[in-house]
Length: 163
Image 1 (cartoon, rainbow, N blue to C red):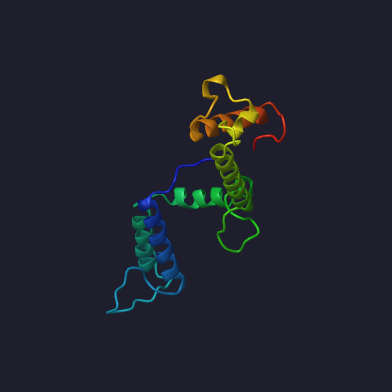
Image 2: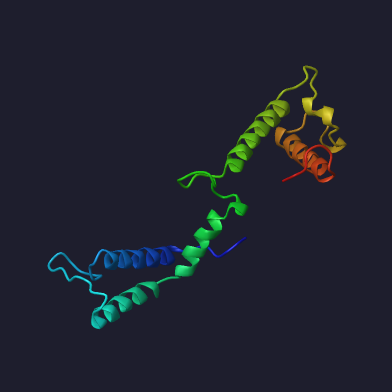
């Protein structure tokens, strides 16, 4: 699922609204300075009107929906963004495994592309490089060809399927 990303104004609005509600929950009127404390009485209609105005004024500065729904999308286990078993916001284990696999592939690709067979030919000729890059091609040419060949094989359901 995709959704618009919360911007700086949205995040500030969400934090301001959260702070105001927390002040009210603790029994304080929002927006006070250190000089005087006004306690919040939920049965006082004037204070409730002022508190609601403070909440709405803060919310008008951004989109609370983008912040809360965005976090809902991030936390949805189907999206595999964060680890559903962690008590803190941790990257999903699939992403960590994918990064490890990618690092392995880059290591293998680099070693194969930069290592000759001892006879002046590229070790990657074993994967049938096209004639256009035969001989001793630039390593990046071989790497790009190798990536494309593996992607094509995966799409053709040879070996492991692409995620």
